[in-house]
Length: 117
Picture 1 (cartoon, rainbow, N blue to C red):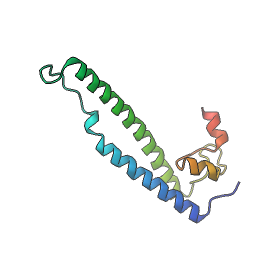
Picture 2: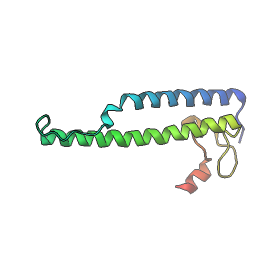
Picture 3: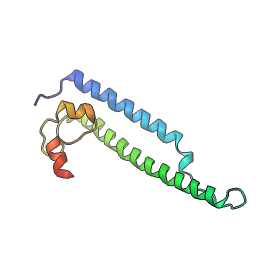
Picture 4: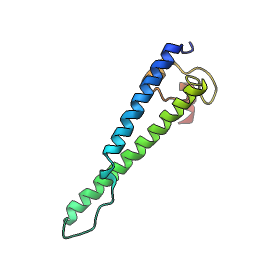
């Protein structure tokens, strides 16, 4: 398996930074949707409140997923800084370039990723 060259590493860094910025922007936009639902029955009916609570729960779940992805991206950027990007965190073997193209934040080679599932 070939190791990544400097140009490929720069490309993956650019992709990771763009994805990080996109997720942070979405996080800022969706902040209102995660706020607590008011229980004032005069301003909102019961079904509307239930819909609002369901929407809030979905927004919170999406936020947790975004946070996990942001953490993975931050870890990949740290690996880039340390010169460890493109190598499996478990076995140290190079991660296939095609795998990184699909998921630039991948920290495991396909063999170790399958073993962790």
